[in-house]
Length: 313
Length: 303
Image (cartoon, rainbow over all chains, first blue to last red; front, side, top):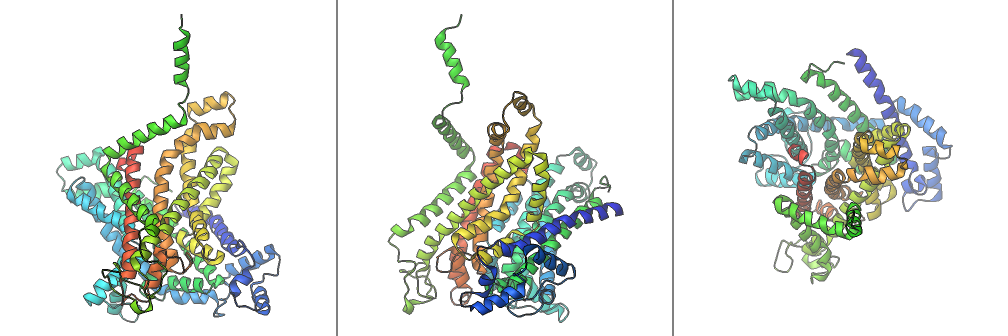
């Protein structure tokens, strides 16, 4: 097991290295001079030259990449062009809200979507099934930010149950945190819920056709026991794969959700960086999100052993 | 004894029917499929209505979507302006209808480009083992960058234009298509009819195009509908965060992005484009689900 974990961890290194190369090359794939793009429309030649110097654009490409990679290994993602602050510090300052938002969304979505998917599969063809599937299709169709604004309008403006926008750290006030995080987590979670519910239903439908499920029902076990202990456990491998891959949707959604709810997280940092063409920040955020995504999916792979003892590493 | 006429007939039957005949037969099949699959028909009809209203918008006698009217700003729905007006007093109904053009063009172009590029790369990579290892590692890396982030970064860098948005949304989708095509190629590569074609000296490009490619088309069409639906949503995301189509173009994403500031005064700027977008995406997804069910009956029970 430990050897397997080590091997898988090693296998992610080339992928991460390739991601790093991509992200590095992004700046150089641009048509024209990156320094001119970053400097904006009203820059003087001296300013452009300054940016060029600051980014090391006067060096040959391989030297630039070498420097960049060495800095990256040391956790140095360069400096923000807009504020001059180190990108790594900017990112660290913004991690908490994003991390909390994503965790809450994961928690809510998974604990709602899996039972719904199981229910839909168990009662396949009935109104329960159709209702769940309809909500799922709608979840795929409504953009996260439209849902976000609708929730603000309903939950904050009309009902007055939640604050309109903003964020309170969980370390400052737990109650305030919960009030601020609920609506964004719901808005962000709907598409993810739809994905997991559909996958759960589909896999459960297959598993429910198996002989051992029929046997379990036949020997008089309660439906809940059969569904959860016999069927769901066997369906968990594809479901957890979807949970892992679906996080890409969440990461994309975070960017707009934080904008809608004025949450000072990484998504907000990204949008601000895009508006200011603050390229080092954009690069840094993409790297952090991608690495997290790769590692998370590695964790998901390793979790299979929990659900299926036949899987031995 | 063979009658020369009948012999000729048999030969003619063995040949593939001309393309227009096949098209007519295909359309007949489609009609039959649509009859048996009402949800798919529903999706197609809704989609057709959305597309028709978007592209016919300039001829519907609506107010110019760009005409400003500073006195009638941020109005609610009325008899003159069905969806109200935006912060420059422009007619929202007209803007929302016109905005559909961009979304539909972006959705279709991304679906088409991603499918064609993915098909080409997947076919070659699936058939050439040495190339395969390299290409698939590249695709893995590309896939580990969340698509929207990659697209945002690309547009931020290339500058906002419809063409750049289309390209930026296409690139993250290509690896997924490549994987799909490659899985079909790997499955077929060792099948008897392909082995027979290789043994009889058929050239590799011909095998790929004549024997393998046709088998990738049904799953690809289904995949293309999902890419199209996603691209329509992502275009709105990009415009919403300010890395999308140029702000002066009335696209659904841009109208909603402008609505951010005036959200409390006129929710219609977000609501109406949002509803139109959701209906369009819903229709594409419904159509895609139906298409999948009829093209691949085995998949009926899957997601």
